[in-house]
Length: 265
Image (cartoon, rainbow, N blue to C red; front, side, top):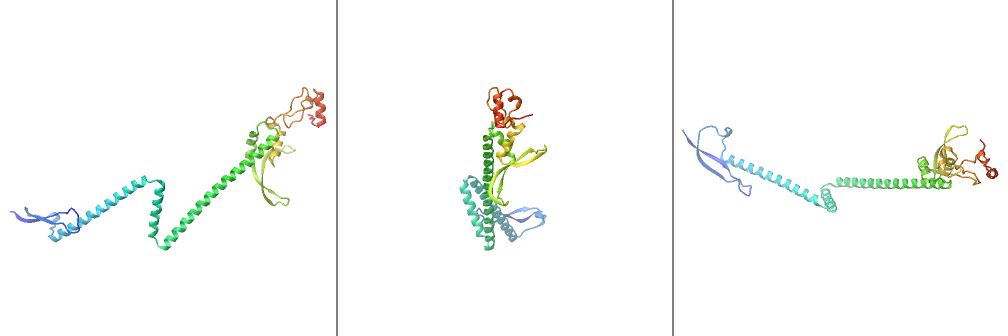
C-alpha cells in the first residue's frame, strides 16, 4: 500500500545571499517507514537548516580566500628587493604599533632602544679589540725585528717567531711605582742563573736578543764576528775567539788581546 509524502530538497542560489534558498517540492510515492535517522523536518526546519548550511559555505569560502591571499602575499614577498622588504616590514611594524596602548607602545620602543644600544656597544667593542690586537702585534714585531737586525741576525723573522709568543705589552711604571700610561714590550725569557738553575727573566726585546746571541743554542741564528786576521776563522756571534785558534795567528792573537776578547777553556 502506498501513500503520497512531501520530500524537501535544499537548493542554493549562485550569489549565496543571506535569503534562504528557494525550496522545491515534489510529490513522490514512498514506502511508509522511518525517515532519515527517524526524523521528519517541517518546512520551517528545512529552511533553517538550509540557512545554516549556506552560512557554513560562506565561512569556508572566506577562510579559503584568506589562505589564498596569504599565499599570494608570500609569493610577492619573495620577489621583493631587500629595500622593499625592509620598508614593508617597517610599515607592518607601524600598523602593529597603532593597535597598542600608550603603555605597550612605550615599552616596545624602550625595548627597541635597548637592543639598538646593545648592538652599537657590541660593534664598538669588536672594533676596539681588533685595533688593540693590531697595535699589540705591530709593536711587538717591530721591536723584536729592530733588535734582531741590530744584533746581526740572519733572519729577523726567525727571532720574531721564537720571542713573539713570549712577548706582551706592559705598562711602564715611574720611580714611585705608579703607572705612566705608556706601554712597552717585555719578553718572558727562559735562561739559567749563575748556578745553572733554570730561571725566567722579564727582558726588553733588545736585552732578550742580545742574550740569545750569547747562548750556544742560538748561535746559528746570528752572523759570525771575527778579527779578520790571516788564517783567522770568523766566530759565531756572541762567542769570543778561542785561544787555541788565535795561537795559530799571532796577528789575530795580539788584536784579540788588545780588545780583551781572549777566551780560555
